[in-house]
Length: 291
Ligand SMILES: C[S@@+](CC[C@H](N)C(=O)[O-])C[C@H]1O[C@@H](n2cnc3c(N)ncnc32)[C@H](O)[C@@H]1O
Image 1: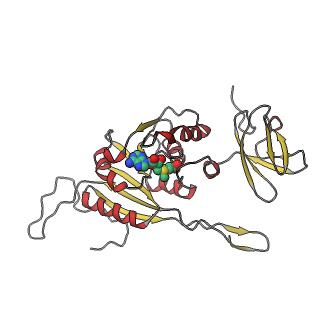
Image 2 (image 1 turned 180 degrees about the vertical axis):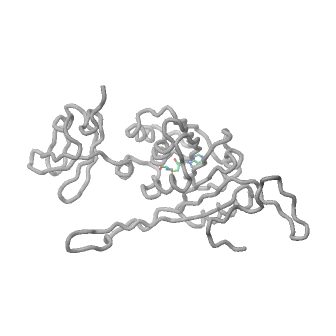
Image 3 (image 1 turned 90 degrees about the vertical axis):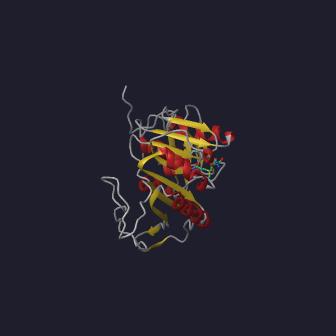
């Protein structure tokens, strides 16, 4: 039977918003009650009723009920290790060009926020293989992932140290959120297809410096770029249009690099032979590069 996506079902996640725009996340279950300082609301009063509808608590407060986005869920999900925030999740998917059907190696699993975004981006035909060194994080991460996509068949969790190497070969992307990603560079170079992309999220610029140094030293990566995303929300009303007073000033840096053949070294008078069809330098991506 086709599910009516306009109506909430038993087991759906719901995001409530009150009149002060405070948000509350819950999962609908028959017979359960949502409690807050605004009063009680029976889940049965929502099941079978409209998404985007307005619902009244027993204390007379009205709540708007919608489906949470992945970003809403990530911000509120139970966590142990630091998660990656929605602004960075989106850019990881975009800058690493995670595509439907891709095979992606990720490390580490953490609370599963990034894993969930990757699973969505690769789709049913893709595969996410996550290396995680700490077994104790797995149950909570799986509980978080299962809330968004129950028991995804295309997720493999490998308990192990990514710094010791990657077993898989011909993978499309390597996505790292570990403290010392420079230790994973050689393994990523072995695992990636030619043209495959490595992306690393790091909270401090000293870590980025060490990673980029290792990528250059390894020689099998080109087009090495680092960005940071500042997301500034705006307050827009009829009488006032201005940036919000508060914003997340810092989360981390994203470094991307493309798996290539090592650069061929020669001189103008004695150029190194090129394998046929191999360009000497990568195509210009419009950056200011030192010559
Ligand atoms: C910051 S958390 C990852 C958070 C995750 N990206 C998320 O969005 O929830 C880092 C994770 O990497 C794991 N880790 C650290 N070093 C590792 C290594 N060498 N190999 C595999 N996992 C590692 C940690 O146990 C931790 O779970």
